[in-house]
Length: 464
Ligand code: ATP
Ligand code: MG
Ligand code: MG
Ligand code: MG
Image (cartoon, rainbow, N blue to C red):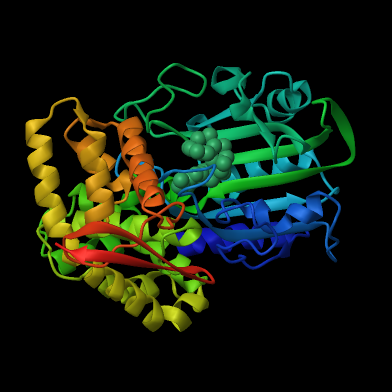
């Protein structure tokens, strides 16, 4: 079953159960300036759950595009290392706004997985929050799940909250067992972090309101919020153990191989590039522009990581932007906004590629030399120099070092950064917070001009 068919089946199933199908909202949340990116299906319904917004429906279902990079949920560091995490993914979700609660939510999920998708029940594991006897009873006595594949979890992994206060409640998660050929232990075990037992669906039961003193008050109308990763359920349905082996990723990996002249399709860098083109293209589609702060800097960091993986495959000229067309072929039907924006997306990426190409090679030489000399930890000074002079975001340097089993001295980096700010201040110059603008080929930091316009800072560099 293709990913697109699973998406379709999901929405149709919930529509047949009285849910209104709601389109994915953009990756930049319209209703929450504190949230970096839309990272779950519930984001666009946040105010509905809080009772601040009313909709003409009490049940909804969606396929929501999500990004988990930067911010509270950050899976960037997992990409290239697990079979199941992406920076960009699609979350299938069904929602009840004070309508049905645990019983229906569990029944729907079980019916969809075991009847519509025909997944053998022996392959599924279920967790509930340790104290949630109500959910446990439904699973064990109504659904009849085998207690051998049922786990009560006492950690916050199975208790969801929107923030320190506000709606919260227990979760019940459904896992798929990919079999003994994959490493990892069952949910709740010490080695649960492997790729054998993969969490596919999270059912959140919003049941309480937490007040400022931490006390939980029952909500008059409990609600349901669920999320299932489309790529993970696609891997299950396509009989593969890694998300990167599903249909839509295979097309992107082949495209990345073509653009980098790579013959070995199992090369890890191709997976990272395939992941990153999705995140970058959709972020730009949704209005994010590479920059030095906030969302723009997260985007820039992802783009630079992708370019560096190209470099790792000996692809030294711009290639990344050429994948936008391939992505539009794979995902354009579900996301027409991507097709509409694709020329703009490609040109933004190309510009960013050309820009980083000017410093990447020299930066890599500096870094390679430092990594050869150092074992264990990379000096903060080097990390800072790469950041400041060559435009290497800290996480990029850390990722390259991690490939050699080397850590970076983050405290040392921060000190070098503070020292420089102080030098700039002492010299009577203004300095900016956060990322530092750089302009091309090896430059030596010279200080910032005081000319600071609305939202833009003119950085002055002495050419090296
Ligand atoms: P995990 O424990 O595997 O990191 P999670 O508990 O953080 O997942 P949830 O916040 O419960 O994930 O999100 C709901 C569903 O979205 C998950 O059950 C999973 O199927 C999917 N999902 C979460 N994060 C990712 C990701 N980075 N890439 C792909 N799918 C994801
Ligand atoms: Mg997670
Ligand atoms: Mg989890
Ligand atoms: Mg979860």
